Image 1 (tube, rainbow, N blue to C red):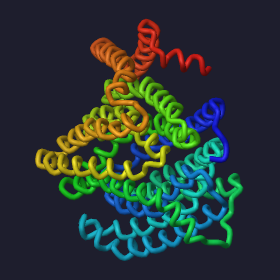
Image 2: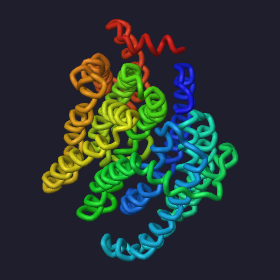
Image 3: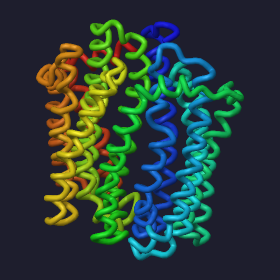
Image 4: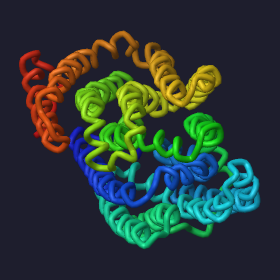
Length: 475
């Protein structure tokens, strides 16, 4: 890294990253409510069916080298340009492949409409090649304010277009164009704010250097993406697009909250820890702070969301989406584990140990696929519960290397997050009993949220939680 990153810069970057993710996902969540009321679970299921193919292609275009550009100590303009041209070339090859296999995908799911949908959505690969470089520059320089402006503007405009198209009866195509326009606008806005343009140069030597680190991350990301989307592929094929729509909708509620909070922290975490990679004591301090702080915020939100999920779904999405509620419960439990996952993995990346990262991914995926094969025999809810079991086991696996690398063992990590978990469970139990007293979905949700927030703060004060005092001192 060119310069050491101080506490004030980390905090400022964290705030802007939080605003970027919170603002955009908050607006997107509101827009998605309108879209979900206008569209059907089947429409969302159709989009989810092809997600795995585009997601896998994006890994080759955007993953690995992007992280290498952030983590590397001496990155030059030639590095950015070389990675850009390579990414565009890979995007062209993969788009051609997806274009010609689209009929095969449509035949596999027996939905002819998927041919054109896959060909249109695959255009985002070219957009991603540009955005990945822009994001790397922003993250490396900790200039997350620029991401806030681009993401918020793009999500508002694309969301409004999607709602209008859904209202006009375009069905699944409202979702297709909403996604395509959103990514295009982000790139265009960043093009005007990030002062980087590709140069007419390409260095195979620099690509090899970056690939020595990024190649392992690319392989890890490929495994992770394939694994995460494998359940959707199986659910969509064995059951139905509607069932897949419920499954993904159950994922959306907790995902918006956790990816916003935990994602904001970890986006700042990698460049911050990379800047201190030669001081392992400092890296451990940053990692511990990330785990403790994100757990303190995420645990009550996930437990609270699980409690209010049924009246919330009825109120926001109507009763046609009620089958997604059990999935909300499972995903809330699963996403609660993210602070441990991400902090451990980002620390390993920041120390330049992408070899360990890859080994962990291989071990976790073998374990996860084994559980998936067993659970799929017992129905779609068993598949979701199997995912949760895989997540629990993965917390042990991800934390294991840092016992040696940073002297931060799993037992110590558990003790760090245990206070937040315990008072979150108490808070969840208190607001659950309110459902027997308060009638009406809207009134119940409002009272549960207010009472839950107040009780959580009071419990934090009573038990003198260190992370609560830390957050107060920030403000």
